[in-house]
Image 1: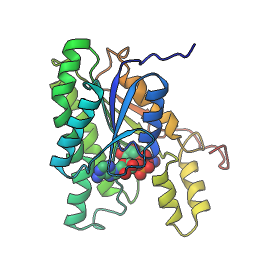
Image 2: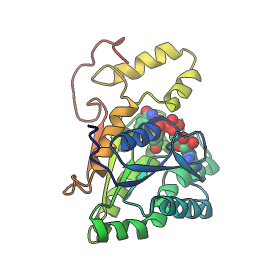
Image 3: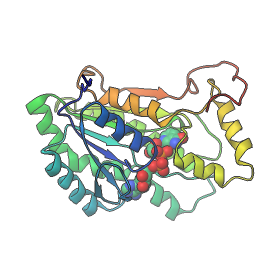
Image 4: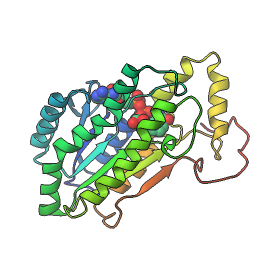
Length: 258
Ligand SMILES: NC(=O)c1ccc[n+]([C@@H]2O[C@H](COP(=O)([O-])OP(=O)(O)OC[C@H]3O[C@@H](n4cnc5c(N)ncnc54)[C@H](O)[C@@H]3O)[C@@H](O)[C@H]2O)c1
């Protein structure tokens, strides 16, 4: 018999067409949940509502369509995000606003639109949860990631603020902080570098485990936090980073299994 512990759970995953979001949508589905993906890309393997997180009207329409399709909403995974490279002087105001508009305000837009549905799920079934995909960059200084880190610092702070605000609603709010994860995003960065193999080896060596995190490992943590059985967990920041944030150990030799 298939073990489907999340049967009946109604889940919306932003950025579910690729990488961590796609692995998360797959994992929820495997565990019996019903999933809708919100993305600007329609190539997801799951029912998709098209929206750009930087457009409030499209987000509201997409969240309403997802809730209609699922018959409500128990879980929102705010996962979609974009990167930015450079020190604090590298990007102009337009780029700062563009990246903030997706990574921070985009998350606000989806959560704002989903909240009435989440409150209803909390009241009717006690199942409401938000999980935000934050980053190691929120609490560890990484070189050449000033703008990206600032947005993820905001996501971490917002996670805690929302957890406090929606405690009384019965909506739990948590986030995951992945280390460098082996997704199309990171592959794009590697492909753009002068020596992708050397760059990959350097990223692996930066992690105490000597390998990159997999999208499935991040998905596992997201599903765990969203699971109604995690009912005492709110306001948590969960590292999924091979020990990169918390540990002080010599890195293992590179060339491992990632
Ligand atoms: N890959 C890593 O190393 C890593 C590490 C830490 C945190 N993260 C975070 O994980 C999340 C997912 O990253 P990934 O590596 O899976 O990236 P990815 O590029 O593989 O997937 C991102 C998805 O988000 C969607 N998206 C981007 N901007 C959007 C917008 N404006 N509107 C709608 N959809 C949009 C894309 O279409 C894509 O499907 C991001 O929030 C990222 O910051 C990634």
